[in-house]
Image (tube, rainbow, N blue to C red; front, side, top):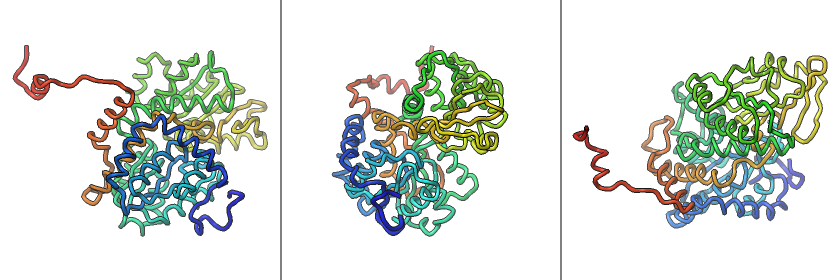
Length: 429
């Protein structure tokens, strides 16, 4: 708990580390806003239209400068919002303080333990939301397991991550999803840019901040070649690393090979990698047998949402007492009579635990999707089925047009003749 706080999270309107950090947080929020012109335009529109009047929103997200701009956009639209963290290490405490000072309750402290993390989720849900904005599905899962009393008032929710969408679709397939969810992660203006360019850059940023590692000449193993893995592999190669990709999907593995990367199994790659980065959304992607094959000094990082991709329980069993902190967020595990393996950021998502997450410019599109999808749910939620929806294509394309305009880029428009041709079948050779 923060030193300035008293009582329990449930009895207070917020729980943050230090309210006195608000000034520094506000300056950083303003800096991020300069790179978020699309969300800024939406905020101006919402201020007039008030789409969230009398609507309560709970957002479980990384408490960063970019998320703060989303929260302020929802607030401008009339929402009564409460925020909680979607990861124990990703909160920026000064940002949390600034939001609280501006009237947006936050339950999040960087480095909070698991007990505090889940207590914060429960405290946020006491706000009794109409709309849920989730990042990893922890809040939606808690509603389905422990807070079913909230379900009758919920119009729907939005999901930011691949990991969360997988969990929501599993709920849908099991016939248990209790309200409609919009898979913001699957919007083209989200995963094409946020997952690839945002994750690619911010993952490298996190690794370099805590290690000061020279990537040039290193053998880097990237587990997973989805949009996040593509971005990570691209950026590692750009920094001079020799990149190996591991995959379970034959199409993605073929794509990685065609993109010029060496593709093999983790069992084979384990012996060669200097740096390992996971980005799959799955569990135990790097496992006990892989640890046993690794070089002395190999570095392991995770860029997936949960700290389950590297089997830390197995590594701890292999280590016993041979574990120490070398630098902040850099832990050394000594196994096999002297073999040293390095884990970054406790195996949690390294881009937010060890750095600041995605650049604001790319989150501009992601959070524009969140804002417009939430407004869509307010309008349409009562008429939707309890399933996972994609972001309406009209919203996706509107965001792309707004981003292009902000970048001062013009594109061609179809002529009347071309429009007719694209919808006809008579023409040919």
